[in-house]
Image 1 (cartoon, one colour):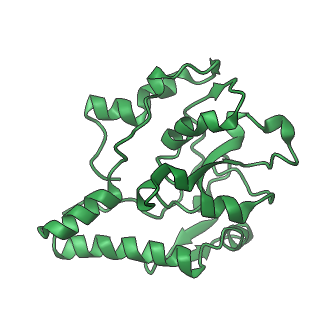
Image 2 (cartoon, helix red, strand yellow):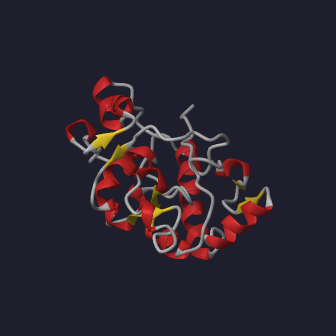
Length: 208
């Protein structure tokens, strides 16, 4: 039986951060670290970089606490997440809980039909704030859930297999964090578990 990718399940527990670069003058320089940190997925809706034609250009470095309200956190890594431009636009200057501190898996879950369901009042605010049940977001989830279903029905179909591999594999351009030299790094051991290192070690799965 083919393993089912973990498409739309927020973490049930706070996972914290594995990387801790610091000292960059421009927050955009943290983007590769955030790509690896968040598994090439949006922290707020779980859509993946591979699902966008322009790949990484469709994702932004998002400030958990807005720059306009907390300018002192402008370039602080722990105040940054990896987010698709749609969620980045919806969030604006509104404040939402840090997904690395307050796990979204306790606030929101996704039904089998792809719709987002709130578990708590905070989950209601998250779904409404990021428009998770608006047609564009819902259509994306339903498409990829259907692709998984088709792969189960016809595992040997080469066309379906090609679509599946493109949708649920890791990006080809995994960032080389070991080659980066940030001014400081409070969690240097995180580089050892980067996706590129895991691929080199043979421990990175084909799909996720």
